[in-house]
Amino acid sequence: METKIKSTAIFNGKVIRVTKDEVKTDNGITAVRECVYANGGVAILAFIEKKLLLVKQYRYVVGEETIEIPAGKIELGEDLKLCALRELEEETGYGAKQIEKIISFYPTPGFCGEELHIFLAQQLYKLPHPKAMDEDECIEVMLIDPNEAYQMIQQGIIKDSKTIIAIQQALLEQWKGETSC
Amino acid sequence: METKIKSTAIFNGKVIRVTKDEVKTDNGITAVRECVYANGGVAILAFIEKKLLLVKQYRYVVGEETIEIPAGKIELGEDLKLCALRELEEETGYGAKQIEKIISFYPTPGFCGEELHIFLAQQLYKLPHPKAMDEDECIEVMLIDPNEAYQMIQQGIIKDSKTIIAIQQALLEQWKGETSC
Image 1 (cartoon, rainbow over the protein chains, first blue to last red):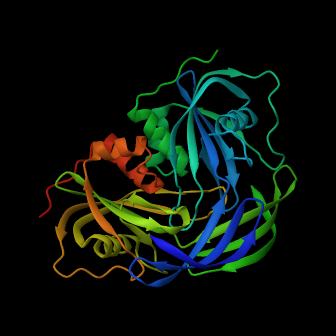
Image 2 (image 1 turned 30 degrees about the vertical axis):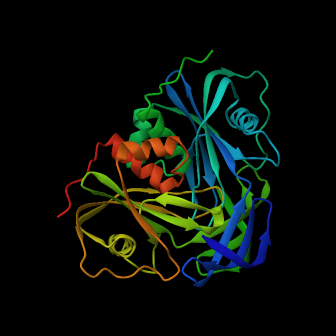
Image 3 (image 1 turned 90 degrees about the vertical axis):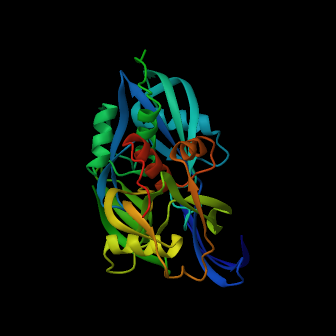
C-alpha cells in the first residue's frame, strides 16, 4: 500500500492526464510517483473466414506503422460493448452479432493507470453504410492467418501489447472464428 | 506517416517525459498528439522447479497490488541482458546462467513510446548475497504453476501486459523451465 501525501497536476490533455504525487510507502519511505491517466480503451479480436481482422496505422509516438487489432478509446460514460462495436465499425466497416469481453489488463501499471478491455466479436457482417473513422485516422484493414500472426510476433513485426495478448489467447483457446455472414 | 510541425515540452520527470505535438497526417489534417516517453524496461520470464517466478507489489497508479514477472527500468546506456539480470537479482535474489530476449513490444503505442523487452532466464540459482532492491520497492516473491497463472489471467487476478504475454508465450512454446541449481 502507498498513501498519497500530495498530488500535483501537471497536464490535463484530451487523451491523458499527468500528475506528480508524493506517497508514503509501507516501509515508511516517502517516494515520488509520476502518474499518467487515460480513459481506457477497448480492442476487438475478430475473425473473417478464419483470418484475424487487423488494422495497420502510423503511430506517431513510436514513429512507425503498427499492426493491431481494431481498438479505440472509451468515451466518457460509454458502455464497453457498444464502444467495442463502434470502434469495430469505424475502423473496419464490420458489425458483429455477438460480442463478449475476454480479458482486461493494464498495459503499464508502473506509471500508467489505463486499463484496456479485449472483446471477442463473433458472427461478423459487412455493414452497408459504416460510420466513418475519426478524421485524423488513416487505417488499412488486413486479414491474417492466426498462425502467421503468431510468427509475426516472434519476428517483431507485431509489437502492440493488446494485439499480442489477443493472438496468443486465440491460439491457446483454439478460437478460429466463424465464416462471416 | 505523420510529420511533426511543433513539439511543446510539458514535463521532464524521473520516469517519464511528456510532450504535446502538432502533426500533419498523410491525409493533410493537422492533429494534436499527446506523447509520453520513458526509457523502456526489461522483464524476466523464469521458472524455479517448473513454477513461474512472479512478484507481487503495490502499484500506486492503479491503486492495487499486482502480480507480475520481475521487471524494471533500463538505466541510461545499460545493456539489456545485464539490466534483466540486475532486476532479477534485485527483485528475487536469483541469478541465471542463461538469458535471451524472446519478445519486444509496445505496451501503449497510442500515446506512449515506451518499449518493453521480455527475457527468458534459464538455469537459475540462488545468490548468496543479492543486491538489495530500490528502497521504495516492497516486493513479495511468488512461485505459481504456469497453468494456474493462465487461469489467474482469465479470472482477472493477473492483469499486467508483460506478465500475460510471457505466460501465454510460455504455454504456447511449452517452456516448463528447469530445476534450479
